[in-house]
Image 1 (cartoon, helix red, strand yellow):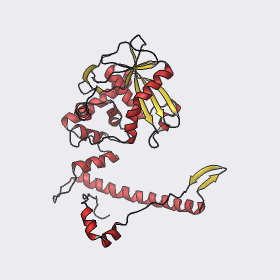
Image 2 (cartoon, rainbow, N blue to C red; image 1 turned 30 degrees about the vertical axis):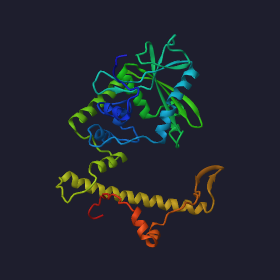
Image 3 (cartoon, one colour; image 1 turned 90 degrees about the horizontal axis):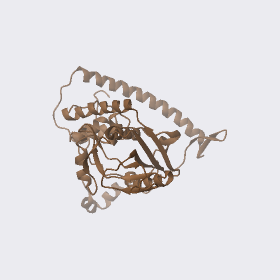
Image 4 (tube, rainbow, N blue to C red; image 1 turned 45 degrees about the vertical axis):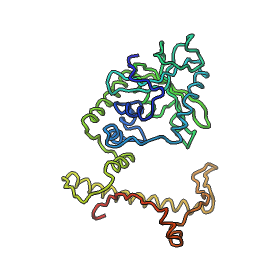
Length: 335
């Protein structure tokens, strides 16, 4: 293995781990840089790496259960394939200073130390590494992305995460073991070509140069970019900014796009109302016995009448009322 150990992560606090990880590019960043991460754009990642916005993500139910089940998935893989799996909790650094990797597990040649069919913990670098093992879960909490694993596929973000680890460590084979809700364990193997890894390294290198130079990547309209900009510029001032012709043209493009969007939305509404009228009180519409679409009622929910409560109990309302931060609205003149 060509990577070196940057730090042991055993017992490391999340705060310290995040600080260490901010010094470079990790496996989960690869898909973001390449534009295949549905949850974050390159600009949002860049803003985090440059310190413009803090990394405030503390996890959710899906990530929590993913972490809880990671070891179990590794054990299931070891038993099912009779493989020797090793847990080596370290942060690795590749040929470039920014090239970082937190590998889940390693698959090694079985030995007296590393038994086949088991997961073994070690504090030292294991010998005779065969492959990297990445353990995933989906559909355990929420709908997940089970379809991303259909037909021997690997979801794009995970594929490039594996490629990053391969480039960092020089271990070109990566095995993905994913526990899918209502399906079970699926196993996918990928052997990365040197050309693939070289292309990825080039893109990551260019991204990191932007981080060092604080040069913004291109904005793409990803949801994460709106959140990032709101974090950087939370409130407006009384100032006016003088723009050039390219921005004036951009405003014209915005007006045209909004007009085209309104036409498409009107067409969608015209079609939808016909579908709702046809289905009437029924919950499902079928064609030759196959479901075309459904239109089902949700269960009633309780709603707190804040206006009535304030009117009847003004003092109590004032006691528990809290200020809600304002927000900024983009309004183009003439809309």
